[in-house]
Length: 230
Ligand SMILES: Nc1ncnc2c1ncn2[C@@H]1O[C@H](COP(=O)(O)OP(=O)(O)OP(=O)(O)O)[C@@H](O)[C@H]1O
Ligand SMILES: [Mg+2]
Picture 1 (tube, protein in one colour):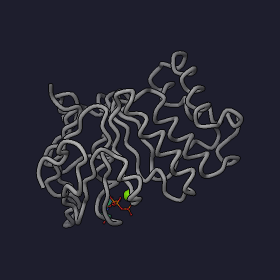
Picture 2: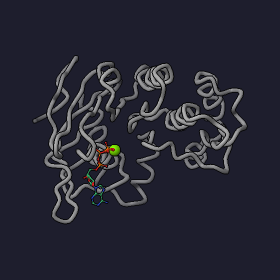
Picture 3: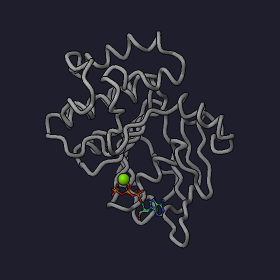
Picture 4: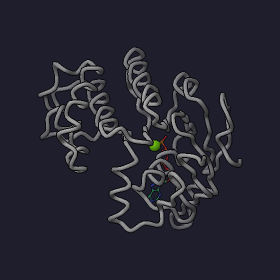
């Protein structure tokens, strides 16, 4: 059995700046990886390369044994919807849509609206947002917006959930509830990659890897080794 996700020798260069050097790691289904590192170390860049939002200069992203970096733009759009859920550093909700509509957006794109709506409603209930279902983002608190963004990322039950500083700026209780929901996605077999500066959240993941000046090192592994080199 191969790994769900394999990142092979990813390098990213902007002009003369090497942002990521030779990043390799693997992740099994149902595991959570915390990605830590100073501001500017390349965490968001790596996450967006994994999720096909940006192209690497070289290297591969392999999902279920398939090199997804080799596909056409059209195919990549499908693969992105098929495999990945994103929680962005900023929530990026659509201001003209309600809570429920924002959560349903990926399902509409994937044309699975009917099946997903029940699940969207159950996620919103779990995140204590049922009473905010028909509100727009500007009528929500920061923590509520985060939970809407998280529900949106989960609605298609992605194989790989990518979360960029999901608990930043949240009070401790809310941060814990967002972290619980993220880590709980493992029970559906989702793998989770969480970029975080929060040592408490990192400690709750199955592994932690650390980026320093575009290079990866295994900071701690509470399970099997996640970093293939480093
Ligand atoms: N489009 C771009 N062109 C040139 N340099 C870029 C571009 N995007 C990002 N960078 C640079 O790449 C480096 C890594 O950026 P990235 O956003 O991945 O860092 P990060 O680890 O997520 O930081 P933070 O913790 O502040 O979010 C930074 O030095 C940034 O200035
Ligand atoms: Mg970032």
